[in-house]
Every structure is written in C-alpha cells, then in structure tokens.
Length: 437
Image (cartoon, rainbow, N blue to C red):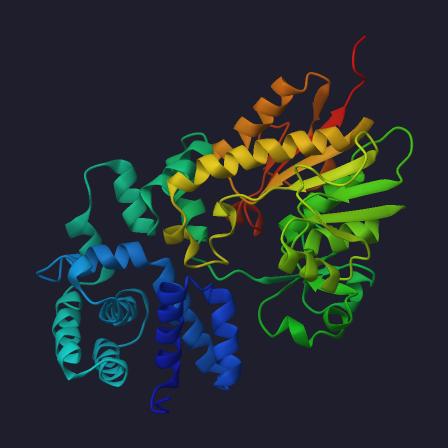
C-alpha cells in the first residue's frame, strides 16, 4: 500500500470491494482500518470519504455525467470509482480544491495508470468549476420528486416511498431523506447488566439503551462478555413492545421467527419469563444467533417452523425486508436495492405472517416488524393479514412504547431517524382471538 495517502487508498478499496464483490461497506471498512492501523483523524476521514461517496453516488454521477463527453457506462469502473471519490471531496467536504484534485490524481496514478490519471485530472477540474449548489441549480429536474431525489441523493423510488409513508409532506420527506446522510450514533443495549454500567448517554426511549458518539463498542467489557450488545434503540423498542403487550393466560413460550443475526432474540431471552426459541433459516445466521448468547436456536424456515401450531404465547416476526429504514448504516444500500426486489419480499412477508399466526395460541400476541417505511412492507401486509385471519385483532402499538413521541396516527408505529434518532422501524402488534363456532 502506498503510505503517502493510506486514507484515500483505503476509501478507494472500500468502493472497489462494494462494486466488484457486492461487499457491505460497514463490514469491509472496519477490517481495513484495523489491518492498516488507521485510527483517530485518519480513520474518521477514511470513513467519511468511503461512506459519503457511496451515499452520494447518484448525485455525483449526475454531476460527473455533465462533466464528461461520453456516457458514464463507457467509463471504466475503477476510473469511475476514483472520479466519484474526487468529486465527493470537491463538492461535499471542506477539503481545499487543489488538495482534492491532486490527491485524487495521485490515487489514480497509484491504483490505475498515467492515462486515466490525466483523464481524472481534466474531469475534476470541470467539476470544481461550480460548488454543489451551483451544480444542483444547473441540473435541477423539472419534476418535483426528481429534484428532491437529486438534492438528497436517493433513487426516485425511495424518495417517493418516504413521501408516501409521510402522507405527502414534502418538507418532512426532505428531513427524513437528509437524515440518511447523518452519521448514526452507536447504540448499546443492556441485556443482563444494568444500563448504568454502560458508557454513553442513556437512550431517550429504551430503558436499556445508551448512545455513543464514538469509540469501538468491542472495547466495552459488557459487550465482550455478552451482558450487553450493539443494537439500535429502535430495534430494542420492538422487542420491548412485544414483551409489554397485555396477555391473558400462560406466558411460557416466546418465539423469534426470523432471529438472525440475534440481537432481538438475545434481548427477548433476557425479558422472557420462560422459554425463548429462536428460528433462523440460514445456517450462518443461526450461528450468529448462538454467538449472541441465545440458548435455544433451530435452523428452520419460519414459514414452516418445527413447533406445534397453536402453542406460542408471543411471537416476534422481524421479517426480511428492503432495509430502507437503515440506509444511514448501509451506505451502498440505496443504490443496490431495486423496486423489483419488493414483490418477492412482500410475498415472503405474507407467508411468514401466516406461519406466525399459525403458531399462536388463542390470546397469543404477534409483533410484526420491518426495518422499512415502504407502505408495501408495512400498511399493506397488515391489512392483508387481518383480511386472511378474521380472528386476528390489531392492538394500538403506540401504547406499548410509553414516552416515545411522534409515532403516527396508530394503531401501528413508524419510527424515523429524523424524529427519534433510530432506524426507521415499523411495528404492528396483533392478538389472536377464539375461532367462531
């Protein structure tokens, strides 16, 4: 590795891994930082450049397209990675223009060749001719949603989904999309320890949460011994809501139907008065559930779990979804997900909901959770499952999150990063009634 600029080399290598290997930046970058012994300001800058460039990709590509005399599809992908990294520094950081251009050209010489380096230099000098506001004013689309998508660097379909979930409020939609670009705090959850033992400020909503502004949570003793974990406060609230739901009769068997990677299951195990059974279809994720300290884990399909029907007192279904509620934690996800992903996901969600209902005893409680605000993954499956199962009754989930404001009109709950500082988790809670006749 070229030691002259390990920060930009590291950021570039993250972009390359995401593009070539479909890697996840939040897994690749920490490993590279450790291997290359980057810490402090160097680690912070590498993180900003890698994550920021990935988040802003659509916006950067629009500006680069206006600065290049051929389609971006004709630009070699490694060269495009370098150009995006340079354009990000020019338009969305305080790095001086000459430094942003010269370091990016040096990067091109190091990772590419002299020819692409000259091309990179020419393109970035065109990009540097205007600041971000100037480019956005010049390239602003006529359509309101297209313009909002460009300004916030989201695909239009995601901007539209946020607007729909926020009932057409464009001002709040803009704030929600902007929150996707903010660096999220690390949230810790006290499982079997006391929250006062954990570093950070107490979380405002979960009685088990703390929030850290920096540092490696792996250095926290309670995280190392499993009495605490890293878990978004919104996810904590989902598990707490299930545990708080009113229940008549026995409370002996709780089931987490899609348990990987194990965060909610580990918290439920700490909350459950009896048995917690975690079900996970993927073997490698089932291993993670066990590593989280969950005692009873079965590798099985949640649509057909190896559990007797009508025996579970409480069921958590944290269903596979688009993940649009966690875009701030997964910088490449907004460009990786496509609208065509939704039909397969919503079909699976419906099948898992039917499997979860079948597990419930009469009077049992089901919490349906997704990390997405998309109505196709929230309101629509709730209406559909109530139609398919007439004895299912929806509870007002807002009552299960005491003290948490701005939860929407109910009876379901939608959290938001810009409102709550959490991932955009959705929650609907049901109770199974007695069959008629």
